[in-house]
Amino acid sequence: MPAPFTEYTRSLIGKEEYEHLVAALEGEQPVTIRLNEEKLPPSSFSLLLSKYPQVAWCREGIYLDRRLTFTFDPLFHAGCYYAQEASSMFVARALRQYLFADRVSGTSLQNTSVTISDVPLMSKKETTSPSPVVALDLCAAPGGKSTLMRSVLPEGSLLVANEVIRTRSQILAENLMKWGDSGVVVTNNDPADFSDLTNLFDVVLADVPCSGEGMFRKDPVAVAEWSLENVTICWQRQRRIIGDIWSCLKPGGILLYSTCTFNTKEDEENVRWICDELGAEVLPVDTEAEWNVTGNLLAGTDFPVYRFLPHRTRGEGFFLAVLRKRVEESDASTYRTADRMNTSAVVGERKGSGKKGKNKQKSALSKQGQALAKITKEQLNVVQTWLRSSEIYEWIVSGTSITAFPAAYSSLLFRLQQTLRLVSAGIPVAEVKGKDIIPVHALAMSTDLRREAFIVKEISYVEAISYLRKEVISFPEDVPVGYLLLTYRDIPLGFVKNVGNRANNLYPQEWRIRSTYLPEEIQVLEL
Image (tube, rainbow, N blue to C red):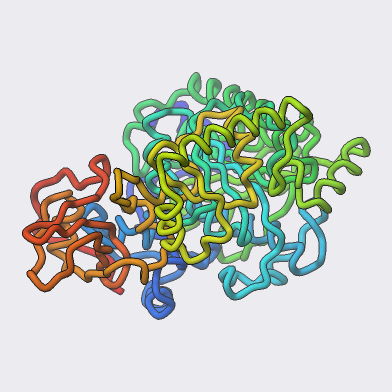
């Protein structure tokens, strides 16, 4: 370990604790995954939860007894699970405590917390869901916390997942597309670009770039790049990020501030700065004593924060604080009005901001009308049968592409398009080429896919790997020609066009498995 890190951390947690920490950082890291309950059959979901130890603070998280060969597991590519370390799944605990508080107590995000014992850690299907929210995952790639948020958010919510680095934003979009929820917008912006979206988000997760001390066990580069100078650069950048996005959080809204580092400069001292400079209120999250979560380490302060140390909790290093943006007197009436109207000024109703806004929307609709001319009404009617809940979507036609986006957020989408760089939004459903309507891979990944609209062909493991490599696949003569939905273990994997002597592989070129060999030992998730 770098000498300055040793000196600082030993002074922070004590000599004996530090020795235990170093021993843990030099040991083997746990293997954890988070299951996608929306894709797995209920029997398989329950079986996996009973078969493996569960992550105590996240009902969908499990500890495995071995590392899976993720690249060669078709269920991984189908979005049935995400490989995420356990400590960071604590975000689910915080979200459930505050987002589901109004279901239990009739309160809103503005009110004080209820205890987690009042909020059973059940699935959304098993609970009466609270009102939908608009959430932002600010520093989202590669998508672990975004997919977690998408699973936890109340039904009907919208998640905006942002990544500032363009190549990483594509990976983020891929992982969210595989997860399968339509209520997602992926953006590629600097945090400062969100400052004009005033009072838009109910929840913001800022998992800010940090010095990475909590990743020392899994990332040797983090050790090599660590320095006190880098810590200083990080805490200053983190404050800029929070300052830039503070205006886009609604009064009464929740900020989840997290890092994967141990030092107080990037953790408690930044939380104190958010309170002192921005007027935030720190909120508690209920935990159990046996989890061994470490609290506030900054002398002279006692606000609640949650630090996961690898020698005390079974996971990597992680820090989380939950803060609420205070509702000032000047904001209160405005916020309550928007809440009663279900934020109709932003979501749901097609309203422009004055004459100029109406003209912009009219122009956008005119362009869509021109695009629609390239696609017949009959073709659009066919595509709309491919989703089970087609009536809840606005069907957006752009050139020869058809996308389904939740209609409740169509006005919000328009606002985002005027401000941000959108990578993806909703479900890309189809491409039209002449009379041919081609289903898009994102449709196969969607949890709202209407499987009955397609001929379904179950394939073997070997065939699944060939498909994921985007190789040519052949089927027996009795398999019907046309577009087929391939499934593996009865889970949708993607589309092919069977032309008789061969099947054209429609798997995205950029997602394909590039490796041409199979490992001698393959470990996959067994359902």
